[in-house]
Image (cartoon, rainbow, N blue to C red; front, side, top):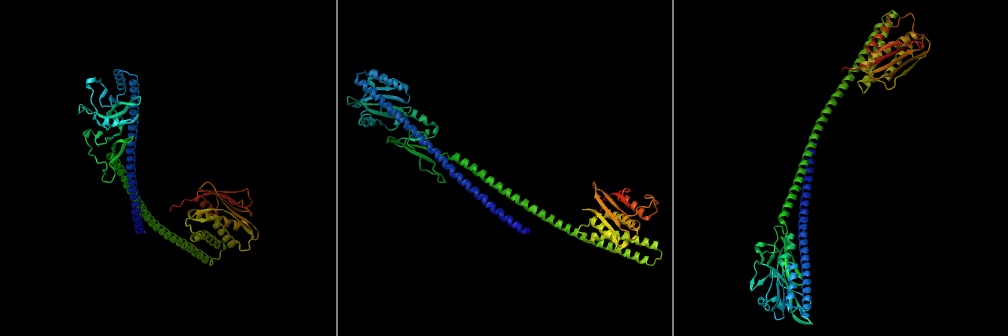
Length: 519
């Protein structure tokens, strides 16, 4: 059984171990997929929000340039002076810091009005823009149509302006009485635009693939980033999106997924998951070891109990044999007394032998009952009194006697140390009742009742309704062997005996205690 339990425990341990680690591995895989999915969703949300903001800013700038064109058209139609128009444009630029320059260019490409964020240009500083790509494209635009330039660096006097100022130009044609007068436009400082994107950790490339926002080390240079790059596990390192404002000059915005943070979180989750799996595995192993130890202890206890049970059984068998032999020896003694009395002529002496036989028989019955009982420590005292009284009644009065027995002792069990002296005392009282209480053919009742009091106390009511106790005999001080024996046995049982004079015949009230067995 022990080997079988070990095999079952090992198989169970291995099976549960496989389940634990399989579940842990699946948890890690699910978490990995989910965390990458969440990171990709976050990155994509950044791109979508950025596109939305750029479109919103683009829409505002488009409305602004159309609004300015309407004002200039009205001013030109009403012959408003260039100075007044310049003031209006200057006021507009001062109000909105996103724009650093406003210009009115005639249809030949010559600046007519130019307002910078910090100054008004004099007429001798007006430049010829006829060769600039944005002029060539803007002059072709239809009425109320806005042209948007590339995202590039501002050029002044054929040189790139420093510090670098990324610029987007918004131009729209100006008409007076349906005649083209030129174009009006705003130069947007894209840096101010990009401030709205500072919290997104993004990089923005213009249509030429140059970095205009993001990596400061490569700013305004062609991007060297391969947006299709993947990590060792096949996950995209970058998330990108092409932004095209009304289909013009596509820009690329991209962000890198936070792989370092993701890897840290993943490593932490793996560690916790596998640590818990290991602890669970260890706990299972300890549990199985404890169960096995308890099993071994239980086996040892069971074996010990079996040994004790076998020894108790052997002891019970031995005790039964002892009680049987004691009963047989008592019967031998009774037989010897009977044989001896047959040689005696004197009836009184014979009677003494016979009464001794009764006393021995009262003890023999106890040993016989113990021999036949499953409980070697106690006997059913009600059955014992029935057997003792019937045996004595037949022995002393024969089978045809008119004397009746009334015995009451429900569910009464007493040990050997109490049963023997109590049996001898009952034997003496029954002997006296049958010998002196009833005449030869006279009938009557011999009653015995034992009541339980507060343990270990009992009450014995015993007597007859015969002729009664002779007045000439002193109940407590007598030469009668039987009465002396009754008093001695009552003391041995730590009890007291009283004569009940309220009833007819001879009756006794005896209290006694159950004697605790010493072994």
